[in-house]
Image (tube, rainbow, N blue to C red; front, top):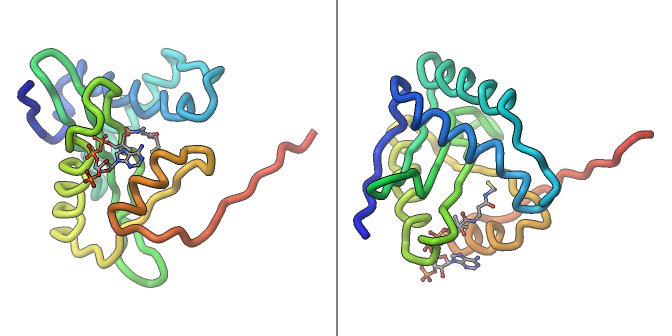
Length: 153
Ligand SMILES: CC(C)(COP(=O)(O)OP(=O)(O)OC[C@H]1O[C@@H](n2cnc3c(N)ncnc32)[C@H](O)[C@@H]1OP(=O)(O)O)[C@@H](O)C(=O)NCCC(=O)NCCS
């Protein structure tokens, strides 16, 4: 199957909704009860349009003939006093995993980051998302801090 890699086109509502849906579905990786709502999808559609117009952000899609099968979303920020690319999302559809799509998305994301002047690249991963942690370690990331949270009743 031929997969093409292309930046998200903010004038294409279908692409925008696909990217928004993928991003909003992320918590389902560790919480199967998480509900994706239309309201949240519309929120992300507007958010994506805004950041891709006004900020240093990059949303790269992997597409087959009919649909989006991968997404990589990065934004420029600063970390430890250095220009930094922060990974907002990385996702590959189950049907095309372990075929190199995630690696290609990461490679192109890092090229974009370097072209923006980033000296480091960083991401946050849910502690239960062992797949992503393993994948990132394999790609040269180190684990630094663990974010901790407690519900207050
Ligand atoms: C992690 C993920 C992006 C990997 O994508 P992929 O297209 O399968 O990755 P690749 O095919 O490029 O694999 C690259 C390497 O990582 C390894 N790898 C892939 N998935 C792995 C896993 N679950 N555990 C350990 N290693 C893994 C592959 O074996 C491969 O190693 P190699 O280069 O030595 O052969 C994909 O599994 C995914 O989308 N997971 C869910 C995403 C998610 O939870 N997103 C929300 C948090 S942001």
